[in-house]
Length: 175
Image 1 (tube, rainbow, N blue to C red):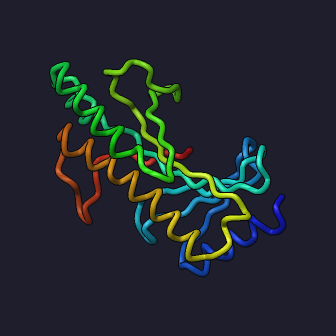
Image 2: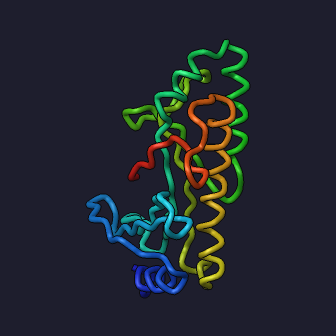
């Protein structure tokens, strides 16, 4: 492992004010869950990949609600294409990667298929992750890009209005 990377990440998260939860994950060297923004219900994951001991993966995901899936089914073919283009455009922002997934975790392959899940992530390497400020900004960037995608789904597919505190009818999922 890059010298003390997990410890540095944990220290920075606590200094920023996050409550951290270490999540057992046999597929990762380590996994930490935080709520972002602080004290919100949005679960973000900070992961040390086994394959790259000097890397940190920062990710957030959401499951599309049944109401939104029903909204997608009501769209005609052109509207579906326009929605999916807008969603991809919102999520395809540097420095992040995104995945649109089926309920079984496989990637969406049909260009007009509505995803059941959307995931946004980025990887930072230890040699570039040198300040708490940069780490905090990376967490914020991943969240903002994810939120842009969530807002496209809410705007285009309708469903219930956001609840108290602007919460959308999405189920946050573990990665």
